[in-house]
Length: 209
Length: 228
Image (cartoon, rainbow over all chains, first blue to last red; front, side, top):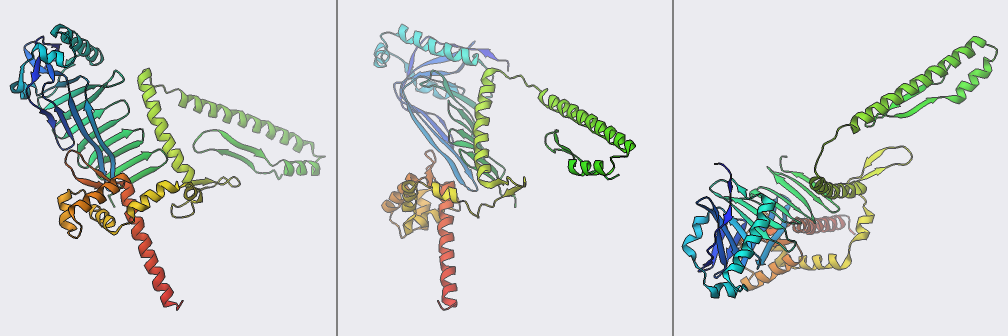
């Protein structure tokens, strides 16, 4: 499948109920009812949505090693816009056209103002990520605008996921494989071997013996 | 002709001239003994010149080698090199910290000794933050909490599994113990699945408690055996 150029639709919709957008063993992303959305379109295809409203992001950025677990959960109640790419069809049944009341409820004076803001956010994302997507059907990409005007990115495919933020990188392949990088240290666990580098310590462990 | 040993060492890791040395004293001694022998003097002069030549050659090799190492460049953009720099600085800091504690380079003999972790590390002991250590010890200081840690040693568990394995602890008490263990960083809870996992410090703490108990028992038995 060739990469496609994406753009936002221009008819705001809202979530009619709280919705889990992604759930696997390590992560839950939930958007709450009344969040405003716009579709991300490429030609006629619906690639995903941009969301404005309340959402909650929970990631167990924990890697289990034979020496013990490392890392901790990351829980964020979000108020800022975020982008979801992939599995767009999963939410279409839970959307309804947004009324001027829904738009003003989120602090916008009109739909035009909301559309302008959404396009500004999406173009910021597009500039950074070139808005060319070519991903497999069962994968999803989430981009959360953070307080540093950057994007925290989460890429998921089944139970495999990658999360990157300003000060954290977390990669989970399965129960026994993971990478966790944060200001507190650096951990790689793979096939029974573990390397942990902390501020003042180094652990290299293997359960081969 | 008895010349002193002419030592030329090439370091293993960095090609360099570490030592090019003629035993000057012995050399001078031989010179005085053979002061009348002009041929020998000439020969010695020749040898000195040869040595000088060797020195030059080695220096060239050394410089050539260093140049070769420095000549490999990987062009990375600024963002990537900054990122790699930060990561590597963190890695280097960790390794430096560990090496500082475990490797001792003798100033007299240039020997490198690896000091085993079990042996003296007095500086580390002195660095313990008493308040922090007391908080951890306090979290450990309850029979039920030690039992919980013991259960988690075999892998992550849901609270229901812990309740089944520890029926003597009521569910509300168990929750409270788990909160204390989490607060102390000995246990972490997954928020998606809800399982409780023992952390690296948690494992260490449990093993430490177990080791102290065994050591105390052993000491008590020995004391009893020797009639103390």
